[in-house]
Length: 204
Image (cartoon, rainbow, N blue to C red; front, side, top):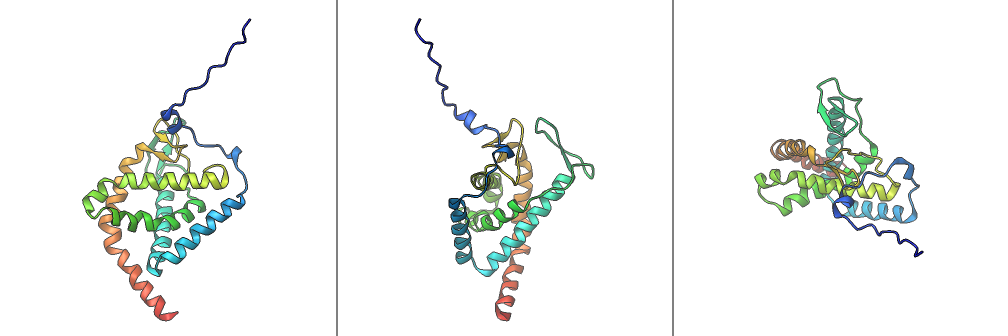
């Protein structure tokens, strides 16, 4: 009797995109190449950003952490990944140092790189969810590479893609964030960082 041949699994792009997030069981120490990556990213950020931009990174990452913490406190998540708004009756507040650090390094791209690419305020708001999804994919996979799993966040549900690094259903939240960033934060908060940088440079 001829030996039965095992069927080869065909590659499915959708299955790859929709792959679940790696579990914490896959955690591992940061490898030497991981430390090298961290060093390169830090030096690139440090030597290619002004003091004002560094302040924007620290403040911006802090504001996002506060936003995430508040979001958790006002939402619930079902087992299937469905997130529902429950003002003042949500989950315990949550954010991570991992996400804060990643955002510090990525904010120059999120803001200044994005502005260099798209000059129109309306178009920047329109495409802001895409801007965030690119951020989440890059940051998420970087953390997975460094630690073996995403210690910063994990999305669940049918709309959680790229190993749980992005969630399509959050598109309306990203639109709100994009509008707030373009219409409030950048016009009114960003100038403060340039003033603060000038003062700090004069002092030190």
